Image (cartoon, rainbow, N blue to C red; front, side, top):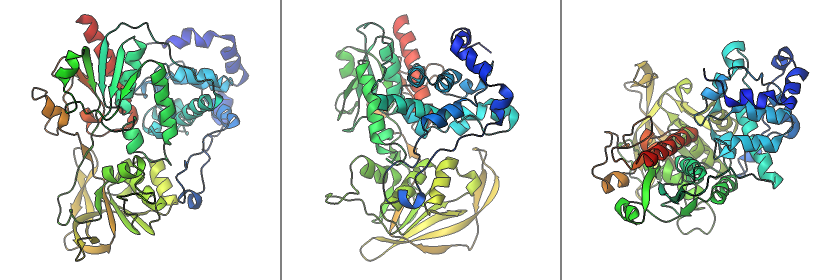
Length: 490
């Protein structure tokens, strides 16, 4: 395993050596993992404020002191953007909070975002020595990342990563979601003239339209974006690449390479009877209209129906965001309908736990087969069929099998369908020679994220078809390195 640079620099500094000597490893392993403070469940369903309240300084230092500062830090390998995790954690333990935040931004353009929405339990924390060897709760890496980033934001002493002198080479980034922002940040650091083109009126992509305020406040995203502006990244909104202007038009303006991170905003439906009834929405529409357009507020010309008896179809994080949003909009009953069991549910365990605390019902091993409506075409019932689990499918999860004769009706006045997304076909239609998969995702070289058109690179959901924020950011960073090599070789 390659030794990280910090082992021969940061580790040899007197303050760090003193920390290691002051608390022995055996004592560190006896310390309990801190618990993130939360809003009370019955209070938080009445507001849009964050559920997780963040660690205070004392809690952060205590949790950081659990880190063993392993000689071979396997946690780093679990991070898609390769954060030097022991380095920033030891800064926190030493009370050097601003330095911790600065070190995070060496490889992560959005630390305050990632500290909130990344599935650390499946990534860096799953590779922690505590988890791998001691079978104990891992160091709360995500909580500490959020703490450092939030501390810097509130301190008024926000650092901006170093940027190389301008090389006057123009690179276009299509889409301002996590993949695009990560690519833009890395390219700006290398001196490129970066412009991000966003189709919507707000910067942030899925961070703004897809994730509710109670999980990720917009102001947090805006501060992170401002860091990129200070690094020289330009943003253009209401600009659809492939329609407002084509790739050839941008090439004529001097752009030498492109990163496409336009996401997967085309919702999937189940194509079952009654799916076009009034009151049946995709999770994309539901969350976008609420989060980005404020359509749940009073006086809105085209309000989103609040619903008193809301059914959300699906078991991913977006389904959890939708059903928990419904509770906050006043739903008397909010139900998750999922065709597998709770154990197979792909949503983060924390999101499931929070939903359960908030009174969300989970109707597992059930699947919708039809919707019924009244004389005005408004949905009134969903016809459900009970399921059982068969042999594992390609995903490794046990395949749901219908139970014959088990259909029944359940009342509802609002249905939100959250069964996956596909890439918007606009990019592929604008570039007929671009190679795409049978699912409509862009085909790339996984080493450098280059598409079949040499000057176009891509990453995030338009390549993966739906994934996490941090995986999209990892793609953006890999693509930025690929673009840099491509332009240098060219």
